[in-house]
Image: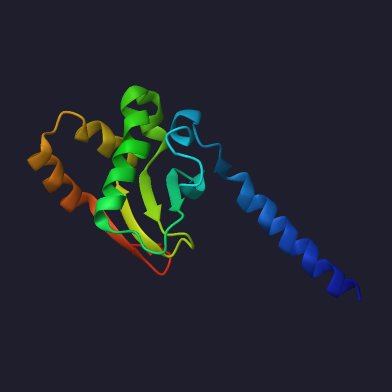
Amino acid sequence: MQQVMRLPAIGLAFFLCASAFAEPVPKSIRDSFMPGQTKSITLDQGVLKIALNVLAVDEGTYRSIAVAAGCLPIMEDRRLAPRITRIEVLNDIGKQGYALQGGGKSCVALEPMNREQSDRFFAENTVPCVAGYCQ
């Protein structure tokens, strides 16, 4: 009986340890979204994960959200840049989407670019997310 009781306690301990690594999402990033637009926004070990209330994320939506909600707050407050190593824009169940490698550093690099340069930059620094894994 004692072993059965220990299993939930062990599971709870692992959950609490994993949750301890999550960081609060900066207010400027949280405020970038309209109510109901997102399912969740988390910052965990440098990865900003934005889960949208959509079944699938296309490249246009990913890029718009990555720039408007991820990068603009970083461009306005450069102190956020080192905290964010990747920006993931995912569907409502977190299994499909795209990720901007480099996170805050990529956002800072994008700021002076024109449209053609940013198109090339996104093509080189975007990875697809499939089955919850961003390559």
